[in-house]
Length: 166
Image (tube, rainbow, N blue to C red; front, side):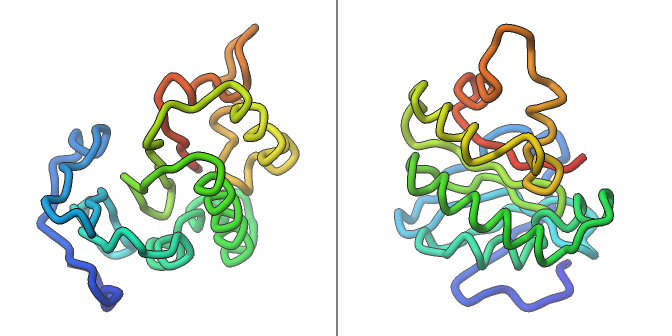
């Protein structure tokens, strides 16, 4: 089980089979809550966390240490990477209504609540310059970019933004 106190209003469930974390978590029956797959340092696997809809992204990033895996891998400052993730995630929320479906030290997934538009893909390019791809969690998009496709075409295809550092 987690080795730190949960933020107020959060609950955590049992471990989920690893293959489940690649799908959307089950919807919450309570419209004031969302469910997400999450894992914190010291845990042996991912669990379903139930959090309040109004939970600030900064609280999520700090609780799960999102980006700390990348910071360690690339020799970057952990707190600076988490602050960068917070600022980028807030900007995405402002552009495209979304909700968190996955959070751990190596990744954050924001599922869009409506289809993303092409003009918003261009805004993502501005938000994630290539020279900060490693710090910002967008390096995977750069590495996996297909010729003759938009840098963030995968975001549109999957209707989610995935910050990741593995």
